[in-house]
Image (cartoon, rainbow, N blue to C red; front, side, top):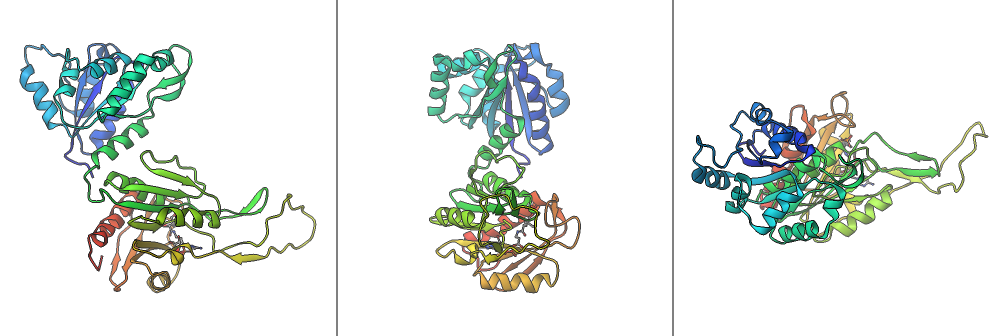
Length: 399
Ligand code: PMT
């Protein structure tokens, strides 16, 4: 979705500079034009050729190179960039940026740009915790810079602490979030649910389902990347919380209901991708149930219909996992729950619905328009759903 965007990737002299090659690679694979600007010390850790081979573009290293016209180069780079990201950013570079120094190509470019700047600090724990570094970072934050990380872990010095470069995935997520500012969901507040609720039977057992959370998390990330403020209400999953999204962890249908009620107030849209249990044990045993009787019955009671209950001035989108009469069943749920549109998963194929990375969905709106989409990655399905949501948010009656 960011094809054609332009990013300057600043690389400074840290042992973690090699991880910037992966960042450059992932951005380039996403169709983004990546111009790498390296400080002199960065070239001691990783070669310009590594970046050039990945980005297929010249790598900028030397402010006074006779073959480049410096005046034009740093201004052109600064003007073209949609975002500047410096990863890794050393204590030295952070200090120079905080002071507004312009003594190499990277600092000149940052000083000249009006693009947003993201810093991913990486340094030894002592340097990071030093008051000077903290003050410099605070100063840059107050000027609108985004700081991602550092992470806690083992450092090159052998010490353990805060100072490791943030995970590449986290840095990429922040880049996507910043690139998405001004997207078609900017200023919109979205509440998205994900995962399968767990209804406890006793301290070690629960009633659950096969939802992995992939569909809901894909929606949350895609909405964030289109500029929305996203709250993700998630039942337990094995997926890491997406950066740049407010994440609320719940376990049961009742907890999910409370979180949705709290967060839907004032939201522009609610998308329920979660597989919420329809029934829960009437009582949860305080102790582990022993394997004694031949038969064991557990009394189940209905859970509240969260999506059906939510009222107010917000767009409501539901999901329906169906194995037969997909359109008919989904249309019934759309009407019963008063939805704007519903996304019906056909769960009869092994490549669609629960747990897998792909999904085959049919989107049905409240005036009966039926849109059958082919098998796609869940990330692509998420974009299609958000395209339709954007139409509804803009006042369109049909999607
Ligand atoms: O998590 P993944 O592995 O990626 O799988 C994604 C998914 C298949 C779980 C997801 O795409 C999906 O289809 N979610 C809805 C599952 C379902 O069948 O829901 P339902 O038909 O029971 O409910 C219909 C709608 O009402 C859903 O939006 C559901 O979130 C909501 N609901 C259901 C029960 C309840 N008590 N309260 C609700 O709000």
